[in-house]
Length: 230
Image (cartoon, rainbow, N blue to C red; front, side):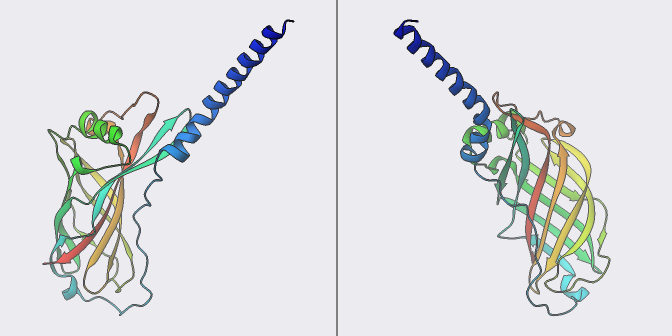
């Protein structure tokens, strides 16, 4: 075999191996280096010290969503069977809640969907335009449909789990959903966190397909609300 032919075969073999390695490693490079780490799930933790049971008078009245609140989504992107979790967030969240006799009797939360952002401008553009059509449906809302009563009176600084049901509106479509909430009162402000599992198709939303990466058909709406008494 001529030397030139041998060199050509070696080069060709090297290219084939390199392409194969790139095809295998590409999804992992995308997951580990090209996509920002997913934001932590919204959770609550107990305070180091507590001041005893919360009285119904402390909770009674109207509350508004204040600074430090956020909402967004969590979804998996799939590239060659490798999952990458993506989170979008916005602090453009408003809302009001009413408590009577230690029972949450009304709540309406509104999120500026057009301001939800990830680490990718192209992903965000697709999400706002093709997926959510924020030009026509700029906000998402959650409206409580049944009163929520705690199983026991809260203790200051101690999170408590409660279940709630409400109408979730995304992209102009409203569905009744259930959500498990964690709530805590620190003596001045309240905090509520939760996540709602959703299927995009239920809201007339086609799961984004960016060509080289496919987005799962299911995801979560997540939120963390800081509440101030009015």
